[in-house]
Image (cartoon, rainbow, N blue to C red):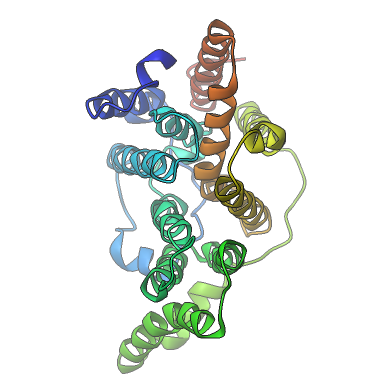
Length: 331
């Protein structure tokens, strides 16, 4: 199956969409139920997304978003020559990673915010050796701030963006002010509009209520959720420990990009870990970087049959965890 995505032909996007629909099929046909616990939602998400939505519509919208995100992650990976060959592997692996646990299968604030993460990274990567990058720097901060309006823990990516630009180039004081303006400009406009409707206090409560909380380190009683946590932990472990492969024979520019991805990987894991609630949807913020790291691992493997077997086992594990969580398969 991997051979179908080892190319850069445009028509492969249809195979990508079919693949993502396949790994998310249990949710689309109703075999997996949506999480009963309400996810941490930002002000903009509460305004734009209806509070009551059927599980099918939620799963369908989530699938459409993941397809778009997979295309964005793949284009980011190929645009900046992060690998020797252009393929659709990064997009395919994002579709798999973003479907690995049942909490990822339905529309959520974290899923919507994740849509904006590749856009922000795209803008950060483009400042490398760019003499005048004021608009690019402004845009990167702007998109990370908008992501926080959908899912408040995304605000920590503003720190990652600032440090990322600093690692790519000499980050002058004027450019730093432009980055801060990328946050303050939409914030001031929004607060001004909310002031007229006496909603500034409500906005502040919504945005700050889900930023940080000490996690409860207890295993759930449900077997499906335990397996989901185990599968997610294994995926993060594999992606996080492959740094020797990621840096191997890479240019200085690509190594800097990988450093930035590691920074966003770390911030995303910490933001998902130290947040209120027990749902796993917050780890969606990490999946774009996980997909890129996994793409390096798959492309560096010389034994293609073994890689195909590993991929099929991963797909089987993802679907099995979904079916067990939905009660279709009993253990």
